[in-house]
Structures are given as C-alpha cells and as structure tokens.
Amino acid sequence: MMVGMGAVCTTLIAGVEAVRKGLAKPIGSLTQMGTIRLGKRTDANSPLMRDFLPLAKLDDLVFTGWDIFGGNLYDAAKTAEVLDKETLEKIRPYLESIEPMPAAFDQHYVKRLTGTRIKSGKNKRDLAEQLRKDIQEFKKKTDRQVVIWTGSTEIFLSPTAVHQTLAAFEKGMENDDPGIAPSQLYAWAALTEGIPFINGAPNLTVDIPAMNELSRKMNAPICGRDFKTGQTLIKSVLAPAFKARMLGVSGWFSTNILGNRDGEVLDDPSSFKTKEESKLGLLDLILQPELYPDLYKNIFHKVRINYYPPRGDSKEGWDNIDIFGWLGYPMQLKVDFLCRDSILAAPLALDLCLFMDLAARTPSLKGLGIQEWLSFYFKAPDSAPGVYPEHDLFIQSMKMKNTLRHIMGEDLITHLGLDYYGG
Ligand SMILES: NC(=O)c1ccc[n+]([C@@H]2O[C@H](COP(=O)([O-])OP(=O)(O)OC[C@H]3O[C@@H](n4cnc5c(N)ncnc54)[C@H](O)[C@@H]3O)[C@@H](O)[C@H]2O)c1
Image (tube, rainbow, N blue to C red; front, top):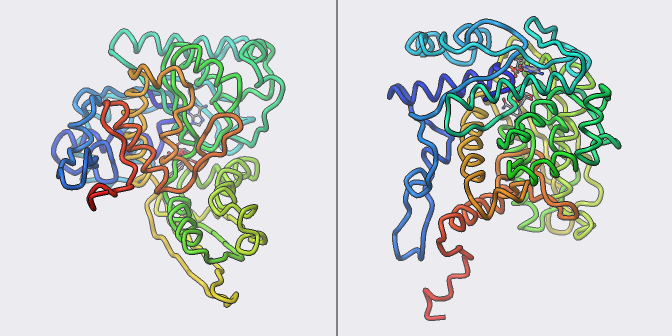
C-alpha cells in the first residue's frame, strides 16, 4: 500500500510489472539480484537472497495506495516522465487498472501542492480511522500487507509533547494538534492494523516515541527515513574511505539540480529544511570529529537542492570535497553524478517492502519496533534511544547480511578468517 503514487511509486509498480513480463531486469534490487555468502569462503556457497529467504515473490505482489490526485497509474507514470513511452505502452492495461484512493492531506504540510481527491472528516482521528478502513478492505483481498510512504516531503517538524506517548498522540489527533502531519495518520493507521510502515521521505513521521511504542505494542516494524539513493549514497561511501585512511576533511559542498515534482515541493523552504536536516546528519556520525578532532573538527558542510524543470527526474548532483593528507597538504575531489532519481529509488522501495514483510514474520525481530538492520537503505537511519545510528554503507551492508543469516539460523560471518591459516 503506497502513500503517494507519484514518480517513485509508479516507477516501482511499472518496473515490477515489466520484470514479471520478462521485459527488463530488476537492477538495483538486492532481494532480486543479490547473493549472500553462507559458511566459509572455501565452501563456495552464495545463494541468491531470494532463494535463501522466504521473501514474497514478485508474482504475488498486489499494489494499491492513496494520492491527492485522481487518475490511473498509467497517467501518473506519464506525468512523472521517468519511464519511456515504449515501456509504458507494454504494461498500459495493468497500470490503468490501478487508481489511488482519496488521500488524507492538508496543504499546510506540503505548501506547493493543491489536492483534488482528499478525504474529509471531523478531525485528524476521523481521517486516520478512514485510512484504517481502507487498509481493512485491502486485508480482505490479500494475505499480508506493508504500507510505504512514497509521498511528498512535508514541512519540517520537531517532536513536541504530543509525540511522546501513544496516549498523547491519540488525544492529539482528536484535538487536531498541528504537530501531527498527514504522514503520521497513515503510520498510525498502518501500525494500529499491525502492518509494517516504511518512510521513504525525510518527514518526522515514525521517528517519535509514540510510534515506537505503537510499533512494539502491535509487533508492526518501523525503520529509518528518506531513501539513500544518490548523492548521500556516494557520501556514505566516500566518507568512510577518508576515515579508514585517516585523511582529513575541511569542507564538503553538495549541490543538485532537479526538475520533477519532488524538486518543486523541495523548492518550498519549509519542505527543503526537512530534506536538508536528513542530508546533513551523516557526515559527523561517520567521521566522528569528537574522536578525530585534528581531521574532522572544522568541516564546512553545505547541501543545496535547486529546482530546475528542464532536467525532470534526471538529477545532477555535484560534490566538491576539500580533503587534506600527510602534514596537512590539501587536495580536492569532485564528483558529478548524473543520476535518475526514481530509477535509483524504486528498487530500494521494493527491497524494503519485502524485507519489512519478512521482519513482521520473524519472531526475534517483529516485537523490536525499529529494524536497525535496514539502515542500509536510509539517509536517516533509526536506532534505539541512546545508540547512535550507523551511516557507513559497508557496516550497514554487513549488519544487514548478518541479520539475514540470523533470521535463517545460519552462522554469522565475522570476517576474522584465522581458520583459513590453521588459526
Ligand atoms: N531518489 C528519489 O527519488 C528519492 C530519494 C529519497 C527520498 N525520496 C522521497 O520520496 C518521496 C517521493 O518522491 P517522488 O519523486 O515520487 O515525488 P512525487 O512528487 O512524484 O510523488 C509524491 C506523491 O505524493 C503525493 N502526496 C503528497 N502528500 C500526500 C498525502 N498526504 N497522501 C497521499 N499522497 C500524497 C503527491 O500528490 C505526489 O503524487 C519524496 O518525499 C522524496 O523526497 C525520493
């Protein structure tokens, strides 16, 4: 169940259908193309993840969702201008068969959008109950469900008293508390129905004690926020490399041009602030200036996103990185990533749906609330209170694979490897 059926959502659904029809390969998806090593390197045993794990099969996936705009997904995919006409025509009847349900929306939280198909209700609680009904209807037609937010970035919100406990949150919905954004109504509805909730945007949504409480109470997993797709993915690869070699960083300037609807929404300063916070957090957490003051204490880190319609979904992200080495001598690195936003995001959304469904069926994971092992996919990973989140892509990857081994009762891999040498 996808909240927000725009570029990422239609690229995911069209892509799954294209793969099912044998028209293309699911590139970028670990669940479909990744392998996992089991046992020792000499065992030569690296099955595909989808053969090793009891994941839902692509053929069994059924999609539905909500949006503030009407029309079917063929039209939505055409508007998004991610996939070419030829691909879309081949799967047109399937895409035409899916239409979003009316949304819970309030323009206060996404200033640049004016909705046309919106639920009305006497208060936020009423809207959330309507979303629960939508979920209950979908439950009648399907075995298991996952809700994923692929909706727009909402305005920046900081946690307040209403977010601290489930009781305060539920009262807040009745009182139309301004601290409760529409994304949180979907999250509350999903978790209350015992369904995992994934947040692809940087919104606060489930990163509050009240949602953590609800998630644990209902055995309905939650995870981090904001898909780690383009510039931040590269950042979480390069920064660990500098740290691993004890190279200093004095400045990191990241700028983007982007012309899709997401770019238009982010052109509003209050939505951009939400994104900016999510993109800025990781450098300090990876580089740990408190441990390495000589190397990372004075980093100047700046992130910019510029709405530039001619580029559509084809984002260009530049990074200028000022680093220094032996005896403090300065060097520079420039990265120019000409990427495609939704092409990078769609496989992440797919993997997260399949992995969160698996987590909800795993006795040792489902009652934990936050699924930290899925940090791999997020710009702002979530972690237990008092534990700093892990941003280094390679640590995240190891953690995820070890969790998958744990789920299946396999030995964890420590990479110690002394036994190959008689140790
Ligand atoms: N690489 C990426 O594409 C990427 C990476 C990280 C995060 N994201 C985030 O994913 C989200 C989706 O990106 P996109 O490019 O698909 O954007 P999009 O604008 O194409 O689609 C978002 C959709 O959400 C809908 N929407 C907004 N509020 C809603 C509500 N309350 N209920 C239901 N629908 C609602 C909008 O009408 C729109 O159709 C954005 O928040 C974006 O920041 C994208």
